[in-house]
Length: 148
Ligand SMILES: [Zn+2]
Image (cartoon, rainbow, N blue to C red; front, side):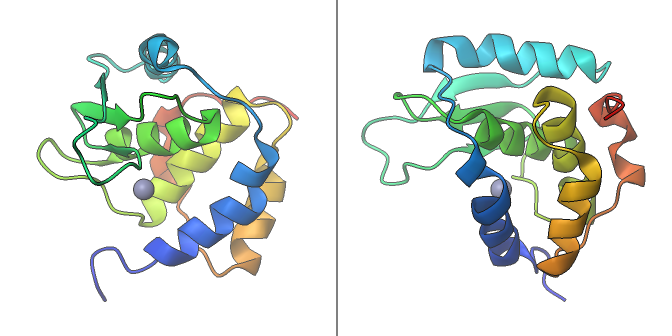
């Protein structure tokens, strides 16, 4: 099994059930304070640093490791930023995280905790229907999930 075996499945699931329901745009200038807030809510210290994708870079999509989150100059959807934060929470210092079950569980808890229109049972159902593996036991450090 490859290290990032369900990457394309995760992208399809997120596009269908999560990003398509998120019309927000966080401007680049506000992204660091959101990251700091989400990180503190999860009772963690040393949040990753938000940096802008350089205009010379050919890649224009966001990415993240434990120490930094790289986002476009024009800003980012809240749910995509939470995806990157989940990578920071589950990744290591020098490598971008994968999209394994611990990542998905962490991401689900962040989405439900911070965006009230999403619920955990609904995300779990949609993930199962798309064949996405998730592990919620790894996600306890993502912050408490609201009662809804
Ligand atoms: Zn990712």
